[in-house]
Every structure is written in C-alpha cells, then in structure tokens.
Length: 337
Image (cartoon, rainbow, N blue to C red; front, side, top):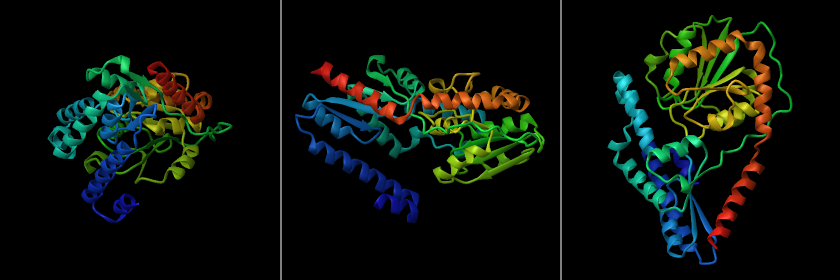
C-alpha cells in the first residue's frame, strides 16, 4: 500500500527506495519462515537471495524465475543503440554506470548462480542466459499464457485505412524509434493506413517530427482499455530489441489481431511466421517496413491470420500454464527426493 501510494504522490527516487525496502524486507521475512518440511522455494527476479540461501542450507529445491533477459544482453543492446544514435546518448541509462543497478544486478546474479533451476518465460530469455555462461541443464522455458480469446474474428469493413497498433513504453530498447523510421519508409497516405502508438514517451521528441500520414500518439492507458482497443485495429506491431516476454503479443493474438514482432521477445514461442503472425529480425528496419507494406497490400488475408492467432491462444491458457508449472516442480521434487 505504501509503495502504491508513493508511485502516485511521491517522486520516482522515493518510490524506488520504498520498492527496494519492501522487496528486501519480504525476502528476509520469507527466509525466516522456511522449515525443513518444505519441498521447494520459488523466487522471482531480485526478491529471493536470502530465501535461496536459507533453503540451500536445508537441502530444499530452489527455483529462480527470470522474467527479463540477462542484464549483459540488455547492456549490449543499449551500447549498440548509442553507437547508432550518438546524438541521443543522454536518453540511455547505462546499467554498468549506475551504482544502484549494479547492486541489484549483483544480488540477482548471485540468485541465478545459487538456484537449482532457472525458470524462463521465453526461449529468448534462455538464449541470453546461455550467452552469459549459464548451463542449459538448469534452465527451463515455460511461456506465459494467453488471455481468454474472443469467440469470433470480425472482418473489418472495406474502404477504411488499415490500422497498426503499438503499445508499451516508447523507448530505444522497445524499438519504438525503429517503428517511426519504418513508418516514414512506408510512406502510407492517410487513406491507406494509420499508426496508433500507446505508451509513455521516453524518446527524444525529434524522432516524432515530420511523420507522414495519420499517426496517433497517446500516453499509457489501463489494460482493460487496451484490451477493448484491439478490436479497432488490424495489426499489432512490436519492434522490440529486448523483451523477456512481452504480454502485449499474446494479448493482441487472443483478440484475433495478427502480430509483427521481433525475435527478441516471446514471438518465436507463440508465433508461427506466415500463419498467425510474422517474426522479423530485431533491429532490421527494412524487414519491418516490408512486412507493414505487405499487410497493407494483403489486408484481405489478415482475418485468416487473426483466426489462426485465436486458435493458438485457445491452445495455451492460464490453466494450462499452471498445470505445466506445477507438474514440472512436482517432478523436480520427486527426483530430488
């Protein structure tokens, strides 16, 4: 409650301090509750170093859930973007130069090393851990599930502009700057297509200057409003450079909206390229431009992609995720016993 209030009424630095205080306090409290009759502990991101240490001493199975990519990969992405866009260097937060982030990264790194199993939400996150030197034997991928899908995909009325939607913070790591450049390259007229961008602006304002065609840029909206908005668009676009999962992908697919996403998120786990969406190489403006133009030229085929996306959503619901996760943990405990 204190943390929620601080995010509304206090400045970001105070909110961040309260978040860390609550996080560490919870970890210490959980560690004190651990008894020898516990089969396993499951910690999340930064929140369980003391819990894991206590569990390890008592021979209890430890599972660390890694929702984000390994920080070494994220730093690499940021460094590459600074080289490509040096004029915007001040907009990047370099993790290795941030003392606070270094402390948290060190803590999470120790958790990763100590944990018996690292649970990832995407194969891309697993790849980042393998590149960081972690053993494949201790990594398990269980993708997050889809929201409840719609029953029927509606065919949009002809004669209206094709609507592309992006949702999420507008940042370099999300690749929003690449989307703006691709939109310029597409050179759509207002009658051909529209681009709707929803999310907090974290980019230099210069990047939104001289955008052709019709583009609507709004700040963050509540999730229920975003879920309702999907029915008004034709294609969802996520040109992210680094996402541990990206739930907007599964949200859009569940609502019958085909997705263009990069291979640096959950897309390889949930999208079958050319059937229920499209996977493009991260950072490739040319591929993004070509795929958006293809969608505009083949809008009559999009409903079939949307139907295939809904079928995929139906095949992996939260009940399926919970059962798979529970079975995996139970099997680990049995094997350890």
